[in-house]
Length: 337
Image (cartoon, rainbow, N blue to C red; front, side, top):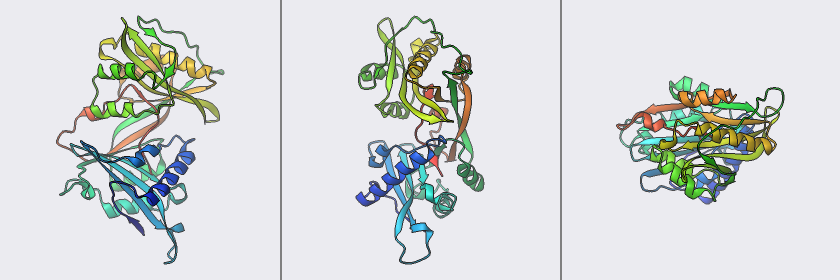
């Protein structure tokens, strides 16, 4: 048995428990590469054009049948619904309660009907999308059981920076001037100018603005005007027993596209994380982006993991632009079931 109630803001007690769950799950899932919920999202509230819902899911401790067993938060779902009814789902189950039917029971009770009055579960969502990163077996089982299709894929790519499998990192000739790595805050004006000169939906512009400000940025300019940037995190973590660093967003303005600028920025970021001690670099990419895949192959990246976006329902304004992404995306969002 589970207990849950939709709310537009987490109560203090609920927030403390959910925050502990989110942090515990992120640490538990880090090595496997499963997605994590950003703790900042727990404070999110509805705004113009977006309705935010929080759903803490409680059960008796250890799923006890005793009436005197305390209720504890065992899972958390966050839903952000835009003006067109597209609902972005993030969902995580406490590691101690996985493979015990929590997610299945929640889906059975809420259902997956998003076409009725009020949208899915009365939230206004006419379509639900959730990313499952790291080929999580529970996500595969759940979506297979309820017939939820995968409508988009993503790959994690890996590039060796040292050791016998590492190819040389030769600089790429470009007309652009590349900066030394600078902080995200110091680069904010140039980053905004590049994003403004790039055709992408508002939701993706917003996601770029929420990038973790602990990262560094290499900027590119052409004729004195901002033309592109790459973000990376020099902080190291362990991946398959090797020191690894993540590359984040790589964005090139429309007018500078097709001139080798993306490759030049990417190589500069690879050199920076290598010099910071990384043995491998990781990045995420849309496998349907032939240009990006070709660039990464030429730079000796190889596929490491596959990820899937699952969808329920549809909206009147659903288009391929809903999936538009910057060239590469670091780890964020999604669902762990």
